[in-house]
Image (tube, rainbow, N blue to C red; front, side, top):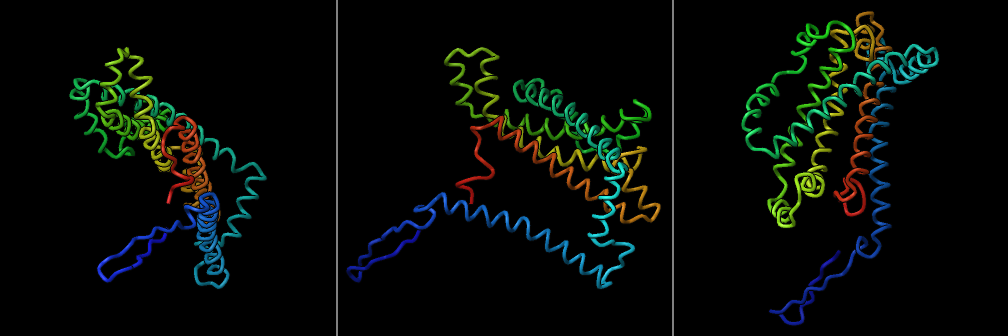
Length: 289
């Protein structure tokens, strides 16, 4: 949009609004903007990888400590082809999915309850606030004592981490539902279930899913740290064990797999959120600057 001032007299001006390309051709402008965003998203990581490759080839960095991306890719391809990589990927993935499912369900249920009932919130919020600030890795010995060695402590640690993110976002989202929405439901004689189904759920779900998306990324971080301490397999164990054996190329293969897993998991949660909340504002699409 452009605005010009036409002065017909020294003390008089007329504002003329001329539509810009975004108003005249919104679809074309959006396509160009989206293409630019995708190009930047691809170009920046690619440029960094090429710089890393060049630095290793020119011996600007020690390739024994920081292997070239081509070396990491070749080693990852060989390990995947030989079937040595997939057991660790699957071990990490099943722990993340199991813990994420438990933590999400528990966090959403309690957050909804505490957001709806002030007495429950007054009783439990101080305790949960105190537990929230405890580093979750500090709870790993507790879970080891409770569940012993195996999958239990890993899944419990992820569930505890995810629980707090989902609980906080759910409770805050329910409390943020405008009072007018609740009043309208009461005026129309909505039952408790109808109030939840038609008022609280649609109004709070977009914010809840934002918390769930954040929890997805944090879940991957926590499980990798936990596997480095108390696991015999998984990507975290692969990274830590390969570093101890000075197999830095294998270590970076594990790091790349963790990054890919985190991005894919977070994106799956984002897409699921879009499908579950078609009424919510889009985080990507026309109209977003």
